[in-house]
Image (cartoon, rainbow, N blue to C red; front, side, top):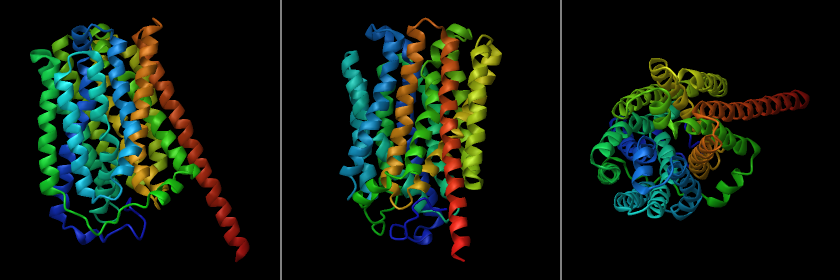
Length: 413
């Protein structure tokens, strides 16, 4: 199903050739890689940032929350400001903001400036992925929408495989500011790729913001956003503090932490592609099953983190099921907002990051309360289970409406 399901908004899927669509998806993946790297790399560098800026680990963890809240605040604002722009031009403007924010991170002299710079970089995030998801689904044949979104988000998962660990290595070797300098260059490369490879889509009309806002009032759209906040929020309750967990609980050396993050990234890449196929097959049952397994893995991590080998295996499995949620969560909200998918898609990215902010805060609270690092993993599992409950409620509402419609149809016949 094409995620841009409005008959007025959808251009023919064959308007872009197969080869051109693959190149466009590659360009979007490169940009997703750059954005994902700057979002996630801070987790691997928390000890270095905290030490250099003379703040605590939980305070450094708030840089994750600050970024996530910047995404949540910037998503609707940038969506409105770019609503009438041609989609490729909007993507390029957002990447320019990303480059500016990361350049400021690279030269930030203190914690306050770094926090502001993180928020600036974050402002582009929600709108970029929201617009990118609609563009990706627009240029592929029907029935391949979730896989197209998964391919774009492959850049995000590869950021965990390559960007985060190597950014961590670079930051540990040359200082954390050097990592953000490298990310700035990545942003420039991504902007060039989008400019050269993503086709202009003048036949894709600008979204009607009034119609898009009206769609957001639908209960199923709001439930889908809540599913994202809670279903993925549990992941960042734990992942924000993965470096101290591995180093203090699993006895992984500072130098080896990056290699464990590479393994986590491999898991996220597998999970992202798996989630895309499951979403195109049976979206809601697959999502519910993935959330169940994800919660169980995080519960288990509270105990397996005490063993180096068991912790490493758990981190890999956790990566698979953490990112298997991403394509179905993104597809669900745009599917339910089919008459106004642009703003809903953007707000769902904001919902991911609101979940990240809430998760980072909850994990930091567990540490501040002296409950121990294993409690962080248990808290993450509980947050994910709340997401599962919302998912089941949404599915039940859908079934009731389908039954009521069938009864009404039978009565009319």
